[in-house]
Length: 296
Image (cartoon, rainbow, N blue to C red; front, side):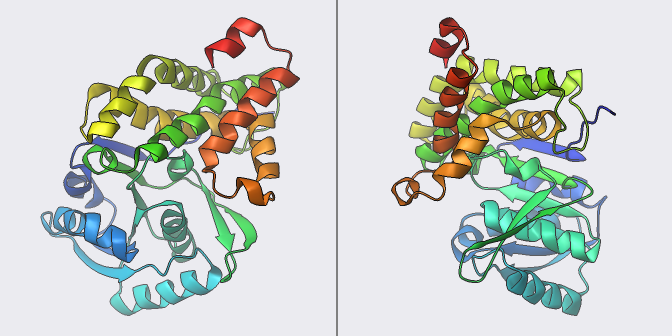
């Protein structure tokens, strides 16, 4: 079996990245369709539109209604066609970004995703979760390629609720242990092949970064400031974990999380909080050394 690694074409991170990304976006398209919900548009929309306009890129901003459904995707595609936009930008959380990916896929257009939180590793992935209009799971859309660009504005992320950043660490915590299990089992990853040494190394770097920088990053987020530690954790939560999980594989930690999603008692928990518990359970299932388990 082939070994496969995949990733976004470009990853940008730093304070005000959502304004500065225009110099790279101009290489993708000369006009963009920008989607965000009302709250995020007020929070970051002006910075993103300014970043595009400053590089002579035209754009049309449209409100995302909140559900990544085929109905919403088709509604937005119709508006995109009316304006003749040649690229898609999604700003916000997971459902907005998944919708932007879907629009780009169906219209064969480049996609830029701009998360406003660092709570999961989903932004870098070639995947969207599609729901019904009622919010019930419908299907996974697996894409032939990852987003063309992922933009992490740490000035925005630093001011998001701290619990979201910590949940992202919980999600990222699983990456090394699941990657190692899949590598040892020669399992097929979501990239469609076995893990490369590079993907496994990124997964390990993700884990080491969490241990070294996690607490410092949490304190920075509590103060709403950007520090080196926060920058490293945002990269670990998003890029390192994203490449690590997609190109190495998922194991028991995420399977246990999936089981929790049907329990009403767990509905108040974030994805990463459930995955973190799943990681501990996976270590028990593997009869891992106590020293390793204790470090988690």
